Amino acid sequence: MEKLRIQGPTRLQGTVRASGAKNAALPILAACLLTDEPVSLRRLPAVQDIRTMVRLLAHLGLESSPIDDGLRICGSVLEAATIDDEAPYELVKTMRASALVLGPLLARRGHARVSLPGGCAIGVRPIDQHLAGLAALGADVRLQHGYVEATAKSLQGARFRFTMPTVGGTENVMMAACLAKGTTVLENCAREPEIVDLAVLLNAMGARVEGAGEATLVIEGVESLGGCEHKVIADRIETGTYLIAGAMTGGDVTVEGSHAADLAPLLEKLDENGATVEGRDDSIRVRCQGELRPRGIVTEPHPGFPTDLQAQYTALMTQANGLATVAETVFENRFQHVPELVRMGADIQIEGTHALVHGATPLSGATVMATDLRASACLVLAGLVAEGETIVDRIYHLDRGYETMESKLQSLGARVERIHSS
Image (cartoon, rainbow, N blue to C red; front, top):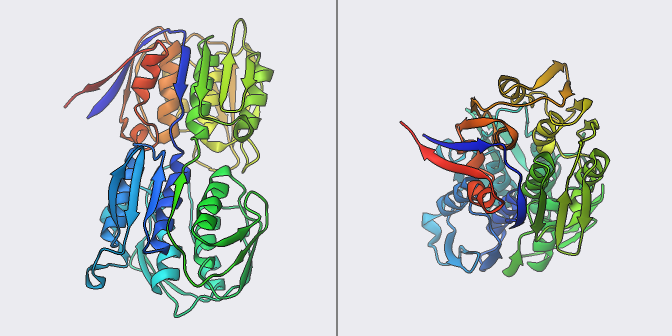
């Protein structure tokens, strides 16, 4: 079992480069199922979820080969008899994004059997909207023995409205609609930058997708899609994590390769917290000296404050002088990091969907356990400001979404190392 050992407190200073966005790369990899022509993807993050998705694509008949900073994905070299249309539980149990192969498989091959996915235990995340959208396009969708089984001789364009914005649902139905006959109009869509990046890829493959980043998407179906080259956008959640770490430690941190517009809600809060924020064309710098001011947040779908930065921001507020209220409206079980922060000395009370964070409180090093991906990052940040040694256990969660976090933190001056224990 691997862990991170952190010796605090530490002031972070320096520059790191953002990795590619995991949450953009996963649907982009799934979209490779829509063509037999080669797709070259660059700036793929070297994280566990990406490796899992590549293994799943291999099971479904696609081959991958390394290129500079990425992979070349191709399915045309394989015999039709070897191709499988099933995504088994053994491959998808650790990664919720595995459901994203459903739409492409259905559109390209007319059949898909996908295990209901797993992932972080941060709350109920049903895929009912994925299935309803595919059914609106004419698919026959059934749930049997823990699997989604879908068939369609030919998908037809349709108008469909999501009951609430769903990132995965928007991506899944959008990919399927690219090969449907006629026009598809999707309403109340999610608007995240990762969806925009997927649309850029699809259009480069020959799709006709308009409106990405807005609430309404219009997709004109085409007969087939081809190959392309694409560079994945920077990971805004990884970027935000390092910027919060810089502010939390009273440091001076620059993240290169990221765009400030994708992180506007966080950058506005950091400015209100008392940090100096500089957003340039291809980098973001945060400097913080003196006292942090408390400010509350409410997590919301994009362009609101991202739920994937809530845990890290909660850790930041333990070092702000006063009371801050953190409201979680996206996932009902996303305060699992709070008991671990309390063990380190934080003063936090949970009241339903709100966390009341009283600061500033000195934190002390302790052995803590990560419960999900973003909680892992939160505890690492807490360890950077805590007095003494912090051990973060179960960092396999962290490795799902952060590329060599300990190396990047070391480059900023942190005293952190990966250790192995039985």
